[in-house]
Image (cartoon, rainbow, N blue to C red; front, side, top):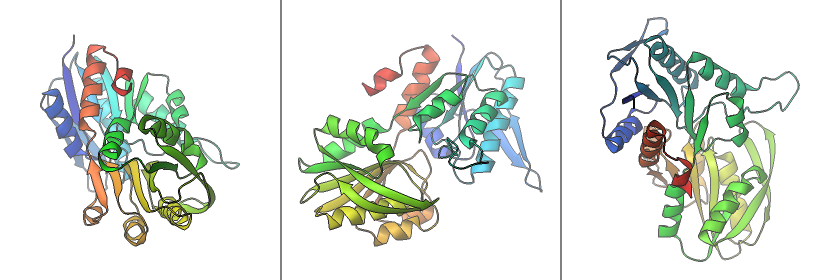
Length: 312
């Protein structure tokens, strides 16, 4: 078996170090520099010939910089004769652009997949893709991990039997239904109308939430427009409390202000994306670590063991 090495870009060094501690290895030595005009330069400072290389890099803000870092690192390892290169992308940016929603627009999630593959990825490990069909955009194996074990344990530890799991839109109904089944809880769905990107208006609640603790479940929170509108709709339908859980804390623009002013009591997210200092100052935001999930998935990928059994 070729030796395992893990490298990281600049997007989420804390998660990378936590993953290394779980596996029991040191983070690989690579330097990322910039020319004065912003060009990125990569230098791998250790021998990776014949090794099983994993690169952990979320394509979060600044999205394009982090994506280019990932592409250049993979090219560097390919040219350094690595045996296998796995792109570990906890948060896959551009995932919302997975289909043509209007004439003459790109399918950017597919383009990003092509770039990653061309740069040298032999395998991809990611988490809670916004659209599951993105796995099919790649011609190499993709392991789409789930934050469910971490989020489910949090819900079990903190909420009682009067809980209803809420999907903020029809697209997330399958995810919410799976959670509700595991928790033996009720299910509700928000009927949402979206007028423009990052703008949403919750219109109706399908399901009984009266007098219950509503837990909104989503894959990501960006500007928090959908989340806060959903929370307001749930309160208007009689929910006693509203909490929220999401895998990816994008939290851009007015997100924190909206969350602070909303009916949401807590927002639980994972560390696939590092939390900004602004978000850390919000008492409602709580962060759970997925480092053990990624560490175990990387170890199992390296040894050829089953990854799907992590989520049974």
